[in-house]
Image 1 (tube, helix red, strand yellow):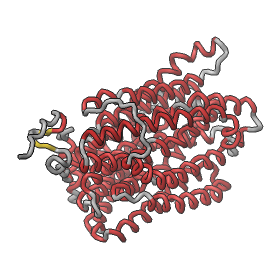
Image 2 (cartoon, one colour):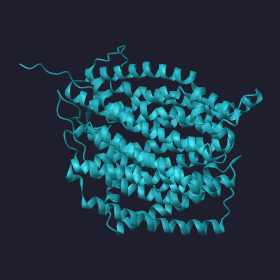
Image 3 (spheres, helix red, strand yellow):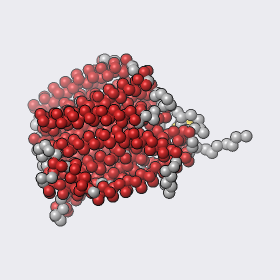
Image 4 (cartoon, helix red, strand yellow):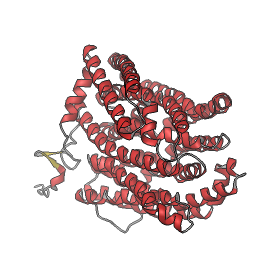
Length: 551
């Protein structure tokens, strides 16, 4: 007689249905509506986080403007941030989440949590050593990355100091990504998505709290921003621990590199490092090239990129994150066609109107967020130019995340890495050619253009492997979304012109009202046009987002 299994913990049930893993009944397969609702929950958390990021950027621009100190900070932050995608968010999630899900499915809960503990200890050991090396050799690294700063010793010295302060950020954000990956695999998306808000809030509060004190003691006040980044990343990790414990995680003092599951994570991770390292090298090379352009160029491009990351993070990252977790639960030798195509449809209906609004509202957005204190109207104009060019890349960047999630769920991390090599090579070539003619504007333009190539290659290779992913309806959704977004964008542009003709936008309240009024009417216009064109995905998405999913 078979022994009666112990009752499952409460969090493994949903309305009486067991939803996890073998040894138990089969995983509940999420449908398109479930997928959309999870995207909505992740998007809500990300929205809260991004709003915190907007506050942080506003504080940064108000206190420091665009000049020597901000260029030094942006270059210094890019160095640990270079390694973040390699050792943390993108690579770690894509390699770890499918392995963790498969371990829970094929083994048991205890084995899966042992893998999680093993992974935590491996990250802690390796990255602690790596961070110490980075702090010690910061001068050598900065002198290479910021070669154009060499004629200005004070700027170079400040960049080195900031780099040393922010290097521990890498360790803490990697641990935060580890926690996020586990929670996503367990079906929890809101807490991991909102956790970066803690990072953003602390990054904003530290420079405010320390500015006067640092100035009084002869310390450069921008160091407060660097300390905020480091401590913010630490608390981004800590805030996720209670939710982790609710799923059953407990710290275990073990480190077993011979564990087959841990080795599988590393096998999946290594090809990804090649692809992500390629992108990050491209990022650093762009920084290197920007240091030779007029002062403020690094800051203008960095500020524009961060605003562009608002819709990219809200929709692109949300869809990619949920897709990876969902694909991993259902993928065997083939992707779930319904889930994959639904992800692409969501990319179209959500990111195309966002991209058009970003383009139309570039100047009002930059003016509202940054044009305070030392940030001048000229800085606003130049940052807005970069932002408008970044807007063209919002849709393909989000579509790339959906395609890449498909490859990762199938255990194929090599193809995205190979494609990244080709795309980055073209990106560097475009920057070298275009920067002679359009200066800093070449960087957002090249980034957007190469994202289209990135998506095209990934989608082509994925459909060669699985031809049924080609779908006429998905093309129809894309075209109808584009038409609706463009017409709504034209109406928004007219509204902006009318608003600015009759209402002065030299006060924070009127600037804020301009964004709220024009974007709201633009979104309503898009929705009505989508209904007129029978774009049912928009209505279905709204209906699904209203109802919170389990977990």
